[in-house]
Image (cartoon, rainbow over all chains, first blue to last red; front, top):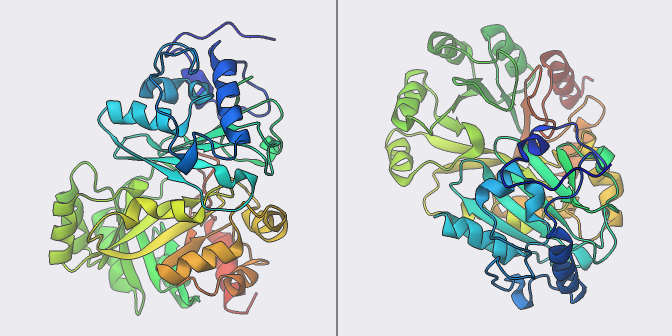
Amino acid sequence: MTPPPRKPGDGGDDADSSSQKDGANGPGPASVKAGHAIVTGRAEDGRPGGPGGQGTPNSGNSPDSGGSAPTIDDFVNSPQSVAGRSAEEIAQVFRDAGYDATVEQSTKKGTSGNAVQVRIDRHPEVTNVQVHPGGGRHTPAGSPYWKISTSTKGKIWVVPADFKGADQLNGTIIRYE
Amino acid sequence: MNKLIKVDRVCSVDEAKAVEELGAGLIGVPLDPDPRFADRRTVAMELAAEIGASLRTAGLVAMVDLREDPFDGIRRARAIGARLVQPLGGAIPEPQVRAALREAGISIVYAGIEAAHDDDPAWILSRYTTVDDLQAAFFQVDVLPEYRNAWQVLRDESPAYDDELQIDDLNQLARGHDLVAVLDYTPQNVAQIVAALPAFRGVALTLADHATRTDVHFTGYAEALEVLRALRGGG
């Protein structure tokens, strides 16, 4: 079943439904696939977002990022809206809203060692957002997933269809394709 | 390790005495509700003071919300004789609040810190290590809270994925910072966990009956006693 496309802010049920596992949710914004492809390409280069893991700043309005610039409310209410976004793009959304956001590149070896965390300070809900390029336990290389950590709802995993192990994870699982 | 045993959300004198007799060196008393849990484990000031007065050797930790009215939180911590506060929500108090705590001779337990299987070790404390004058007593890290069988995953599965957080990573982190570990402790695994995390300062159990989230480790009171007995070698 394919749910209708979401409008900004109408996805609150997604994050609140902690029973969501393994495909309980449909696609996010129509732009997600395009964004997904962009991040996948970066991941295949070994460093999502480019050298240093800092990402390529993106206005959010380009075709690459898929349509209108997201807001923090989008991330909170429609978590799948992070899919396709680089760490730097996500960080910029928080910075634009007045929060400190620090992009931290993983130093671990291995394919998913290219993961990047956006640490957000002083936001009342979101504490960090991680961009994982894939290639580890959960997804094949080049199949990224995103993880939003909140102080109110716990962890929200925004994952592709080929994500494995969701049934073992605590938290909310949302499919983005 | 890792000799420190900390039990959080203790709610009666009887509970405090029981866990202290089983080796707890720090007793956390919840002065404010913790939104992560759906139970009645919150104590009034008078009872918190009674719990503190009943302790023979263990220290008292005031688990308090310092976000809305931090100076009232400090006042309440002082009133019950706590030398440690544990801010709910894992928030880092503002500099002026930390200064007031320092002036009051109260240090901070930073708890609710999550270490997930797909976290880089450098991310776990980065929020704290960039802040000056944290007034930190130690950091309490919930290890792999996204797994109910966290210890089994960490011990048996994670070594197959070298990009995931490993036991060695945790010990390495604990060599640079005072860490206390929260895990899915059972009477069967607690001694093994303690042995595997020698760099940690200790273990912490969080008492709860029900949680509002799935990704948090907690232990019922009766099972916590069994865990503590096992830790003493009597289990």
